[in-house]
Image 1: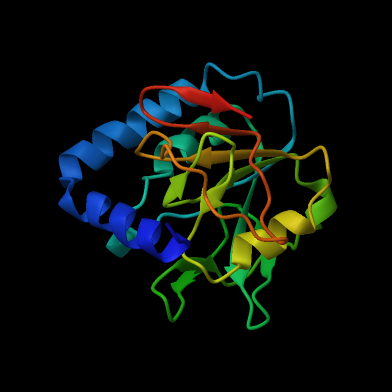
Image 2: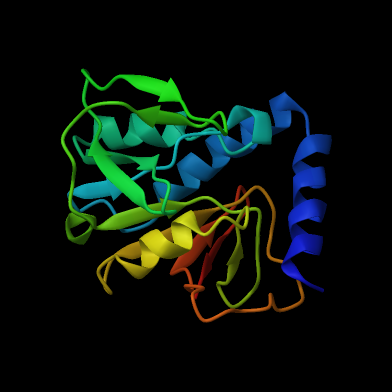
Length: 186
């Protein structure tokens, strides 16, 4: 199967879930993350939820990060399919971009090489740690510019697909994926 098949299939699975299910699963993912030994770092990159795509609600994870006094970095999408990383503060102003994604409009830019842990959005993943995103390449570009020892953690409502995802040269393998039921390490 090709990536477009899985994109469509897993977007449909999200669409068929209820908001109560997604909320429960999001909380379970955040709680499962507390079991990981990832909390001794400084800079954590967090994607902000795209509600219309019925994504994981990352506000639970944001509360954990803030409660642990971590430096949270959020991103702004650029025309060249890169991400600009901005330190999240109480003064950060947000606006929705053309894809209806909330993005920081101001703030201090954080160099990619400072980011220790990256929470990565995805639609599906396989048992080898390969992910399928929306197909625009923003996170592939971003991850290729991160430090080799930065931790990449995918967040998924669903367990891995049984088949191997077709891998392209620019695809990056995740270190682990956290679902409501389990942590998958690669």
